[in-house]
Length: 170
Image 1 (cartoon, rainbow, N blue to C red):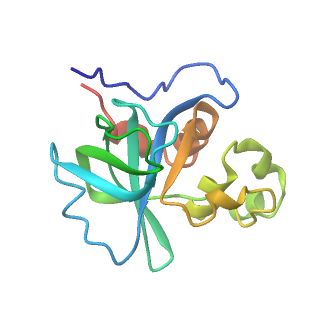
Image 2: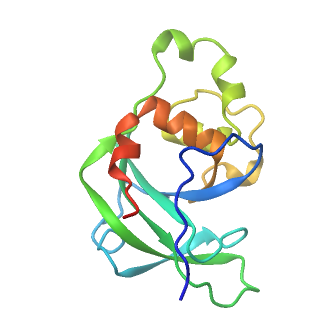
């Protein structure tokens, strides 16, 4: 039996420590297959690298320029470790209604300071929180899955406090 990990809401910030993943669904994809609680779903184009069974996953979707959190779940057992792509997740709870990803206030966005607060700037740019991706590694641009660090998790809950309330591990 795989032990499910919780998002570490209260841990001290440790640089580069991956605590979970964010998986992005495209606007044209039906949500029913991957948001059914307890039903596994294979993301054939999500990268396998770094994922471990039991790690938490936040799901979001971008529709008509609007990013919304749609649910949370966990990574399931991984088969064929030699492959580069293909991750199986299981949804624990869909958000009904989905939660808007709330960006930083406009005056904060216009300064470059918010960029240094994000370890994974590709995640922040994909969510629509950052405008620029000047130092984003090329493999992150347009990716399906994004690494979530403790620092970035804190940023997400600062910008969208309801996210923490909707993700319960009891």
